[in-house]
Length: 472
Ligand code: NAD
Image (cartoon, rainbow, N blue to C red; front, side, top):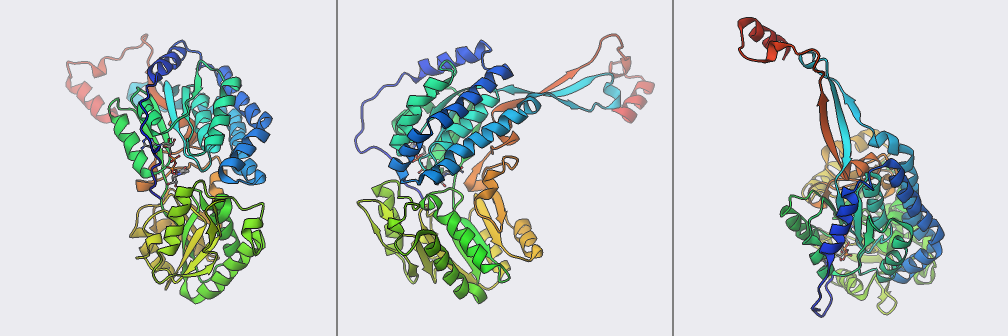
């Protein structure tokens, strides 16, 4: 999935992002954002925004993505308010300094790790979960005591406008800002000095972000994507596996960074598994998914064309369900492809749409080898009843996260860090990982002066040398 959205025309634009960053930096320097009380107020304000402006935000999500309101509520608004609740519950503990043991020779002394905010953070979000992926990282930046600028995706224009309208009305304008705009705006923002840049989106822009960050040695978190595989063992519960895979694939019409991208299923059960997948999709959306109020749309015509080209450009793969769509309404039918081989165009890039290729394999070990021959994915799913199979897949592969007999839901556990590895990203958030991402863990050691043993000072007599060798 390597579309980099750019506006057709190049506009001669100038932005005063330097003044914005200066203003936020002044607020940070004045200490406004540090007290836990201020952080709590901001988190509560964000939660209030999500509750009070629910209808408008859900409307915007429906306008951008045809997102069913319950889906938008669950995966965007509620997800963020749940995590804000978790932040509020744990803030005292996360922000408290951590006592660390001191070796005998340094005693008496107190050693601590003191979490401190970084300064002014930039959060750049994509269009697929445009509320969640903007506000959640911003919430962690605030929880950690930073000022923050959020840049929603211009591709999900209605949601971007709603966030730009409401965030300044609820949150502290001297410390929090939303900047709308396209790639030119991001380029200008990236020209400023930030204390952390948190980017979610595709790897092409991820590289642009990282290059820009180098200039000021700004730490970056890159939440990227990739092809997240599913392994289905021959002993798996086929019906449940099919339902959970179809659900994770088709929520948001497959436009989810951790959506199952393709399935590696044991050849022995492949026919039964494909039948069960078809059944699952029909049970969710009926025989005409385009009439279902629960099935979303593709974000725009460019992505619709890209996805259709993946279906039309297939070589030996067969369409067993779907394969059709309507460009005008950006509907693309839930599509299952069978007999897919690795040289199909659909296997060359992240799909990011409601198309599920199914590839038969001879064994779990073959599936592991195939996964390891490709980039490290953001998520990996394994469906098996045999714990040994699950353990083997987990131990012998590398991915941002793993779900065993589930898809997507590892994201809903705030205690689990969410992030990629290798080409699927770097850094993580959710729970304490989110707080730590926007904090510096400062080392602190204090010793009293009343007692000042001479052993570490020269001249190093033989007795001192013996003591140092024994205790240092
Ligand atoms: P997108 O097109 O909205 O781009 C993301 C952001 O980058 C936007 O704010 C956009 O303005 C900016 N941008 C786009 N082109 C730019 C350029 N040339 N220079 C500077 N900035 C630019 O979203 P997308 O990248 O299409 O998002 C989909 C991708 O994101 C998928 O690969 C998906 O897997 C990944 N993703 C990852 C996560 C995660 O949490 N790891 C979540 C969602 C999506």
